[in-house]
Amino acid sequence: MKEKSAFEEDLKKLQKIVEDLSSGKLTLGDSLKRYEEGVKIAQSCAETLSDAQRRVELLMKKNVKFSLDNFDGEGQQQEK
Image (cartoon, rainbow, N blue to C red):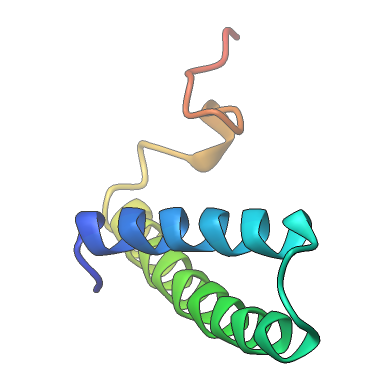
């Protein structure tokens, strides 16, 4: 699994690519190159997140007293 710092770096690269593409200052050729680079980085990030999800699910199966339903989308425990 990708190190957290590498994942965070990839997110920053994606943000920069979006800013560059949104600026309208790139040529068509440069825009296509940056877009392609962004797609590759996004796919890598998606794989990292998918791996993390599988690891969490595996841990949840090993320790059934915890469930994903106890947490909201921001990682905060929900009141019951």
